[in-house]
Length: 241
Length: 79
Image (cartoon, rainbow over all chains, first blue to last red; front, side, top):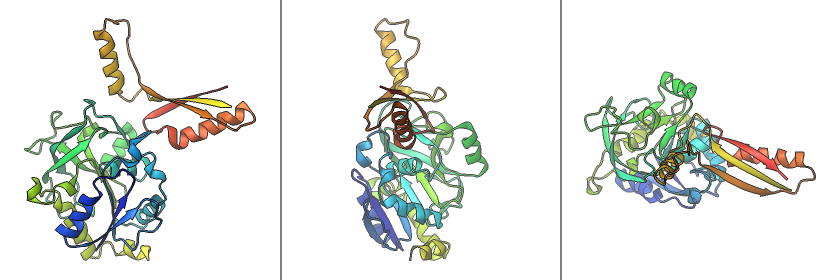
């Protein structure tokens, strides 16, 4: 399986995502510079974390106009799996590939710590290998992860089961204390209506080996590899060629 | 021509920075400051022949880039 890890000026988790795909899972992986217009036959696209374009104006607001984003949009429209992590999630929101927007964290602090998230939906390419309601211990590192959307849009997210991850405590319960940034409904990650585009603020790629404190994030990458092997992603792959 | 664009969070959106500033002002003794909303301010120098045209360009770039319609609204002044 071929991973494309998009690199924007200011991306700083690109190597973590590349490492998880290439060295931990033994898959093919390419860095794709944001000025490129071709995803080079990728089977899955990762928009990594970081501070694209210095977070100027709003997080992800400038990156959404990078030339590579046209290719990412086409890839997503063809059903290809796209994972946006942290700043990558913010870019997907600004690009309109996922609904909603990010506000400054409720407490105004940049939060950098391990948190617990509960997997709410298993029928996405990045969660199909998870157990129902599985609780993952993975890190966050963001100042603007306070997910917001309108009441109408929130209703749609709930009805269509698009809330994929919620912040929880260690026991797996949603509590206000376990919500690190004030996100509406403790939302840590969502998917689009078609379920092939997933964005989340926590960093699964930084939790793929016990040597870094947790390997709970690995299951998300194993999921997309399993989806590829099972043939569920072939339609998107052929649309690339 | 110059257009000024003021971008603010919509009234329905909580503004944690504005709230912190208001709290700071209260601790300085400005109890009469009832609320603070923080926003962004842009000055656009525009090659436009009329103020209508300038307003139209400013509005277009505000829609496209300067403001995020999910959380923000904007106001334009042209001179």
